[in-house]
Length: 295
Image 1 (cartoon, rainbow, N blue to C red):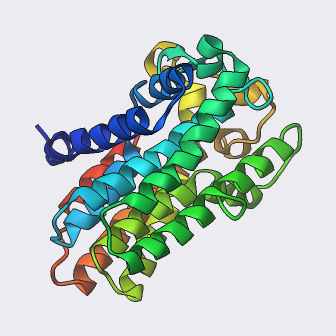
Image 2 (image 1 turned 30 degrees about the vertical axis):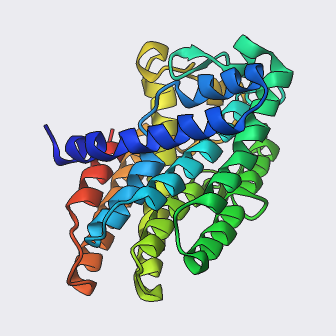
């Protein structure tokens, strides 16, 4: 059993508990609740919560209820984004994590509302989290920025606007820095905030997140071309069907794989610099998570 499995098995059940119990307690419409829980419980690696909790642990801070609640709020926003991404008006996907997408089970209207509810509930949960008021206010401000019109939503809009257009690798990276990277950035920076780290360290975590965010997207693009629906749990070759620019499409498979490796090597070097900068930093948890991003 790897260190990452041990860490995940120890901590992720508490995140799952926060997710499910908060939705159950604070959702009054039963069909809406069922739809929300359908997507929340559909599986997934919980990469963002893991990064957040690993960042807290890396600085030898206790991972407590406040961290689990923050991680759960982050996963709510990620899940909402998947529900809305899959809608006919956006990527029009029928399969997510090996199961029919939310709108295929509950209809488009309920799926939209389930996404809306998860988004707003995430901020409700974070506002009620067991975190001191000053860092909590900062966490809420950064969360709004990462999830909204300066972050993920802006990236989603740019991604759709780039369909059927030829864009550069630099432009593609800019789209995914927002669409994918901002929530990964929030995961690591919020972990650093919960661990009471100074600005210098938060900036290094931001650099780490930048490399991981791009790596995540390059890997996702590669898997869309090289994997199967059965292994991936969602339809493959969708980027080509939607005429999206991708790293393999712009660079070719070999160069895209090289770009992925370069981002992950840079991520590992950033973790090494964190270890050199912070005497009480344990790199093991984050380095184990970097391995998840390799093909």
